[in-house]
Length: 526
Image (cartoon, rainbow, N blue to C red; front, top):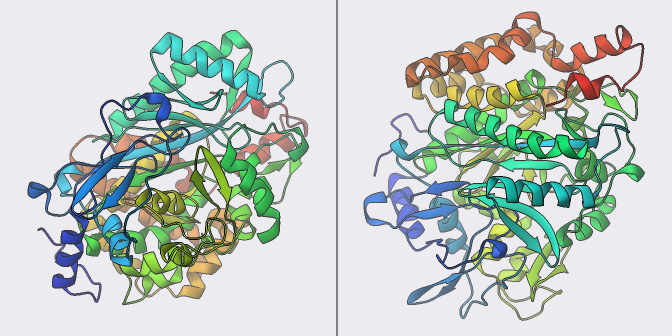
């Protein structure tokens, strides 16, 4: 097993080897005969190997696959939801099983991949109103027929598409999301984005539908947003107002772009997690693109980012414990066990388990389904309902950026790949941020949504830190040798001027647009 030489977690090498061996017991596979309609709305994104890859079968790492564990042999089950029930475990899962699940994401550097996800708002070109579900269904069927995608159904409703390791899914308010396949280079990422947008536009334009690349719905209120017919969203919609004031805005009126990245070991995961959390406010500033609400400036550059500060603080935030000496897979499992649940999927239905404990579930004491034990599929589903600025599954998700136009969809993965997939750049980031305090990191998290790169930091501005970080990203891409540095051009201008995309939109609003929001639908049209 390869270990990162400069890794600094307190856990011993023996402990990490033990974790990786435990991970070999967590084999996630999909039956070849599984019909595409049995897939969850988000099919596979990452193909991950355990740390001891030479002896371990391939593992498909995603939110969508499930496994039922029986001692002595492995049970392969179809994905949940919408049409397959989870297999009931014959023996209780243990905490070590849950740790092993995360550790199973370890993979050698030559197998690291890049997974990009991006959301966008669909709207009627004539009225600028959000797409209705019926229009979305027509669009999905059209893409499936014309470009050979497989349909994903929940009951009688089409809720997504799958083609290979790419998927198209619907967020609660009809936001259209591409979950990209795991690819080796940023050129492949950008080609994937371009192909997706071509296909979507080819069908949507015939329907009078356009797509907007922005972080928050700029014109319409919550009452104007259609609700998608997906069972899990009904549970979330009822629960959100109980735990924060902005959760419904998060569900129905935000769009993001994120990148998913691999790690070689527990030590490598820790280093990348810390670097990602420390620099997430810089990414938020560079991609800030949500300054309007219901036709007017809202006082923020990234309202989408601010919304997460009062959505549900039990499952969001900067996770200061990641910087503790004891942090590792086990500590993240402890955190996730204490994040209140949303649901369990049984008998083709979502069961409301909001506010209940996965720890109780492990013991068969979950009030909503007493006596029943969880499977790894339940654990996987639970991990998808946790929303920190960086999220750990069997890969790391960078979650701090607003949705935007196509050029910036390629720039975000370029930014993080240059920083985290190059050892020298990653170590430089860790050295740069080593003495940042928890209070400073939280201050940046709170202030950047409003003040962007102009946020004061240590006697200067965040812009000055961003200049150094961008150079590290460029240097990292140069050393990768794939001629990918050009993908950072979309954010180089932001850093050099200190003017975020949101500030440029505000300048247009107060000037050329004559304080009308409608031109943004043309300005940021895909």
